[in-house]
Every structure is written in structure tokens, then in C-alpha cells.
Length: 473
Image (cartoon, rainbow, N blue to C red; front, side, top):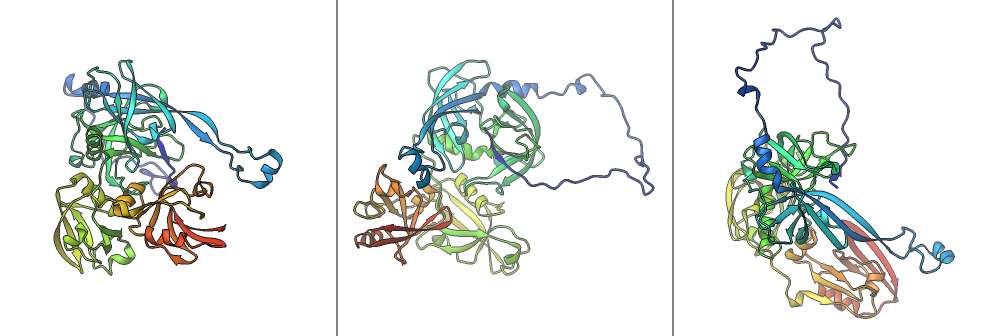
């Protein structure tokens, strides 16, 4: 099912040719209506493109079990009347329908993560356009980009789509969207590229979209966006809609990012995104003038971490990154997308505005530093975090958990049935303080937890919100 983004659009009325006296005014000159010059000129068709492309677009059926828990499970009032087993989690079968694209002759398929992520024991069935059916397994799920890579089980050689360079797309280019909307069967719709590098609807800092008016509906998720040569330029992912149906505003993940995820899956590793080592913020109308910019575009550098690629490239706090490799960047997400598709091990050229002057800097892209053995602790003892695995919040850890912070102590996982699990701690929780004392790293956290408390008072950051926890010692 496609991710639906609810738009709040005000209705508008367009008056065409309405004269002052209320009479319809005709065009200044009559249209010159002539028949096509030949039979061939009247028979333009997308059929040859569809014949080449559609066999590689598949239907993806997923079934999995998910745990459902009553919202009143922890309510003491209900437990008093219904017993301790009230609200215990129950399993429910959940089905999902989407589309996918075969991108290699041996059956490598790319689709959306939200199509196949249903919980435990997910079964995936792939149906080709010629009605052949195959079981498939998930090789990789990249939740940040909402991309998943599947592999058909079997040795059959299959039709596939080749990748096109999505950076070569221009607004106004014609495209076709192929998928299985509403489960009615394979469908093709036609439109143009409406916009590029859309980030306004992104759910993570790794998402950038191609916008198209080719009709995309629920069930199209994971399907193909192809150009007029029948090559893959994007994976259809989301729609902007008030009703759940297409209003001509659809979004696709660019093929250059899709290709990186697929290549990582083929190599048996997760996609590593480069570490810039700088905190970037939006350039707004309010601060554009202070930064001596003629418009609100680019990303404002608010912090540069010592020893990082940004520091080695000479970036300074207060710089504004305007473009990457000559391509203008509207915001921080666009910049990180450009660096990701440039690839670790390569060099990117940044166009920078520094106190109103235009300069360039070359940054060498490398993977973020990983956590060492001294950065991770398995906590145990008579305290609220018993059973939690915690780590220093290094760049690689922050990237994995989708966090913006780059310092502190963060929960990596929680052991089932432990004190931390029973108190509701989750992966991604950042322990900010204990008894009002700030927690800078895991060593400090472990030391604080060894000091017995009559009442544990902790501040925990989760999803940008600061939560206060009090637990008897």
C-alpha cells in the first residue's frame, strides 16, 4: 500500500475568457484545425516502450504476522477487572500488495520497504506479467530510503530493466509509471516530470524524490518510472492526496540511489552513506539576508566536527553550501543525497558562500567512524537500564538509528523481559541525564548507574521529545 501524504490544498476557481459584461469572449483568432499530414503521424504510441518495460515489472504479495496490543494493556483499572492477562499481545496476519522491478536477469528485484516489512515470518510471492509465480526472499531493507531488495528463488533467466542516470532527467521529460494499482493488474500511466529533488515530504534525511503527474495509486508502490527509452529512472513510492487516489502529484525515488542500494545488496552489505562531519541547518528567509545571500537556498553549516571530512576540506561554521559538483542544492537533504550518490572513496566539490564570497572546497567522502569495543556496554544491575545495550552516539550509530545528534549515550537494543524492556526503553532512546547530571558518554552512564538511588530520575530523548522518568530504586 502506498504511503499517503495528506495535502491541505485550498480550492481555486479559474475564470477563462469571461468579459466585463458577463458574456463569453471568444479567442482572438480561430484555431487552425487541420488533419494529421499522414496516417503514420496520427499513430504515435507508447506501446513499443511498454512492450520492452512491462515484463520486468512484477506484482509483490507479502504476508506476515504482527503483534497487536490493546491501548489499555497497562491500565490498572482494566487489569483489576479482567486479570493480568488483559491486553496481552495477540498475533494477526497482515497482507500487503505492491509492485516491484526486476533489475537483473537472475531475479534481483527492487521494491519499497513498506511493501514487504510486515513483521515476523513474512512470506513474499512475486507474480510476473506473464503470470509466472515465484517465492522471493528479502536481501536488504534500507528503511531510510524506503527501498528493499528481493531475490527470486530459482534459476530462471528473467526480463529486467536497465538503470538510467536520473540526474539526466529534466522537468518536462515524458515518463511512464508501471505498476499494480488497487490490485487490478498491471497498469501503465503516462505523464511528465513535474519537479526534481523534492524533499518537502521526505520522512528521513536520506529521501529525495522525483515528482511526476503520471497517475500513481495505492498498489503502485515499488513499481517502475521509466523514460522514453524504456529505462528505469525511478521507483514509485508515494502520492500527495486528500482522498487516497491520484491527484497528479506522485513521487519516485531516483534511480541513482536505487542503483546504489541494489549494488550494496548484491555485494552482501548494507548501503553506507558518507559522513560529512558537519551539522547542517536550513537557510530561511529570515537568515538569508544576514548570511548575505540573495535567496533562501542551500544549507547553513552550524557546526564542524574536528577531524571530520568537512573540517579537512576547510569548511567553517557559518558557511552556506550552495551546490555539490555544480548541481544546486536547495537544502541539507539534497546535499546529503548528492554526496551519497557520489559514493564513499570519491571526492565532491562544494560551492560555498562565506560571508558573501563564493568559494569552492573539495571534500573526500569516507564512511563514518564505527563504534569500538570501548564504545558499547551491556548494562546489568539493580537499575532502570538493566538489560539494555548502549553505545556512544558516534556518527555511524547515529546514521544507523536515524538520529541527528552526534554525542551522548544511546540505547542500541533491549533484552526481552529485562527491567529496561518492562519500563519501555527502545532502540534510539538517548539518555540525557540522571538526577539532573548530564550524560556525555557510556562510561559516565555506567558509573552513574552504579550509584544506588532511592528514586531514579532520568531524562530520555526520543524522537525529538524529552521524556522524564521516575522509578523507585
